[in-house]
Length: 383
Image (cartoon, rainbow, N blue to C red; front, side, top):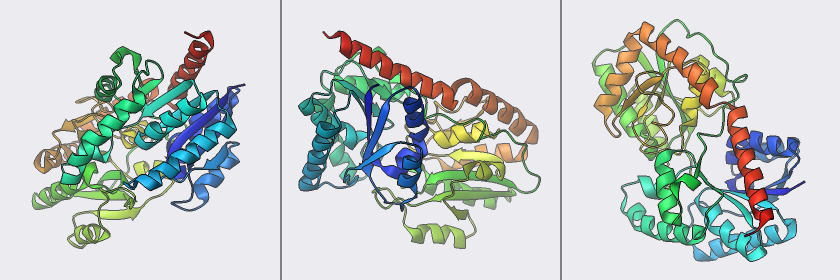
């Protein structure tokens, strides 16, 4: 039985995207612990993780902090956790956990290391001055952390595979591409679309780099064209992210009648059952998981032609891809599907088939568990 430790910034993010993987690893015989920050969104997430039989250890991550003293304290906590837990393998998820976790793993002698980058984050997508300053600094830190790593690297899309391999000085073919975190096809079951007004839904965090300002402008264009469609945003701001949209802007959009805004819900399948079209107009994604879940529910997709979104949409088959930061093109795509029920249905059927073929929870978990086995075997064999 291997000691497996996940290092990730937030309990809610782990519960949402990786808990099923951790349970599969436990069922495969691994002893599993997750190290993360606790309670940003309340106590529900950590309770659900523990109820699934996964041990939890607190690490005080501050995602948006640039304070070196805070980061040093985080790193000390990770070193202590790795020393005491003595993992055979660590699975480090996202930028800060990778950068700090690599230091801790090397210091404590953990040889089997999975470094999984779901996406390059705000500093690599934003055009803000602060982000442009941080981007080269983060690139240097990540390159240093991953220097010499020839196995155990993983990303969610081909574009990120090539970029991560370049930073690590590794062969791109050695970087595993994991398309998302897997969709539970029984929970996200196919359903026919509702009668009534067409609803086009974005589901996720309310961030500027999710393209929500362009979506609001696209909604304005559709209203000006008298297109009978409801544009709905389901989710919440993320105060820990520098790209989080202010509540005042969301309120303004609602008061103008451009969008409906609904709070985050754990009952995501119901969101897609009440929708006709799924939208993700991001500037960049690791992988468009909201699109994958909508596809499983048999909904056509509209997204931007950027890394992570283009990997989730088969353009012209399961949905439509449009240029990023282009409200006019976004409005055209949404309007085209809103007006054409036959096309929506054909894309919906293809979307469900694609989810079954490529994106199921079983397929993704099998891929990652195989990565664990290969890594542990390679380390056991030695140089």
